[in-house]
Image (cartoon, rainbow, N blue to C red; front, top):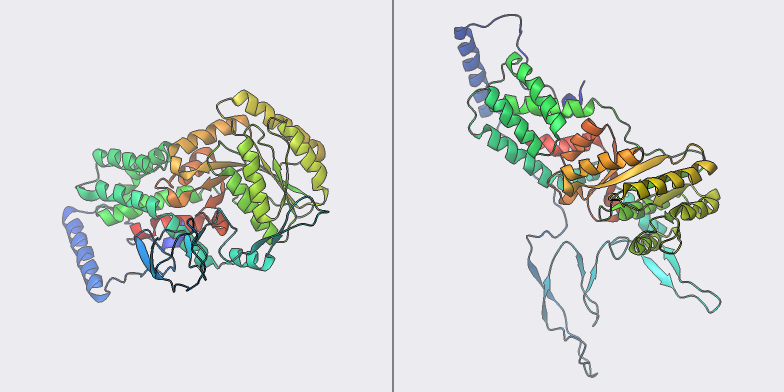
Length: 457
């Protein structure tokens, strides 16, 4: 049974016997019978619409909100720099959480860029004179609550994150079938263009269209609903046919080394930080290596993520040899479970990047011959087909074992997942469904396909 049948059930219309020709009168009688059957079913079974689950969060539709604050009477003078809080304070409400002040404290914005989560307590303990650094204490129990979620909650995140991509597909299909008259060559040309514009990739669009040229005649799919289902079924089953491994290669015994590559700005360092927090929560001992020494900001960013997640980061000054950073990290990682290595993303200078990655690879293999166990390419879902080009260019520099697709929740071009798997034969292993710490998820093809097409059938 294919992925389409597993997720959406059998086809709505049984395939006809292709060896037996159907006369014109028989064809009209069958068409009329099918039409009457559908009308009867419609009268008997009213359409049931699934109400979306209530999500307790403020959306962008809420523009502002009035919060009552009881003013505290005091004899102390008010500082010129201290804002006076009146009985009603107008507060702009966004997706960020607004904390109502207690006493006379100022309103404070809290986001996932600032703390690990709404429920996680991260306290900084002042050190004594004998110590030289601040010690960060992580509330492990609170951290565990962040990552504890049911499959239903995860699937709901997929659905919400695919909203924009789903609309892209829906608009494309609606336009395709708006003036549909018959299945002819013009229809197939428009279908191919629709699929390409939906970012499924040129190769997949051409393959699906070519197969449908033959199959549309076989199943007598003359209604728009039948054609829509047939098109989606072809896309889904081709996506399922690759059978690429989507699980990260975690070593059951010894150190697991993951190398992360990708251009600047795609969310590579953020992905590493979130993955470190997840493994920390699972009880693994995690170490980060800041081997992107080309950009000083990359080192600082990774150190900050290390602080938030409570994991150690191996660094050297900006401009240092990246392989030297990895060498130091390997020396320190003898008793660790996971080593996550951040690398430079200088794709415009492939020669230097190639040399860096080759040198890093030699240093790693000298210690662990079968490592790195994963080389993950971070891609920004909002860039669409440009992400495919990045994947091709990085694949020419170093073998890629998996994709971390970031920012899917803000993209209308999530169809590139289909293109990556079908065209590049590279599995998507991690997917970013939002900004929160637990929004970095292992890729689930069933959740993705159902979230992408369920409203189109």
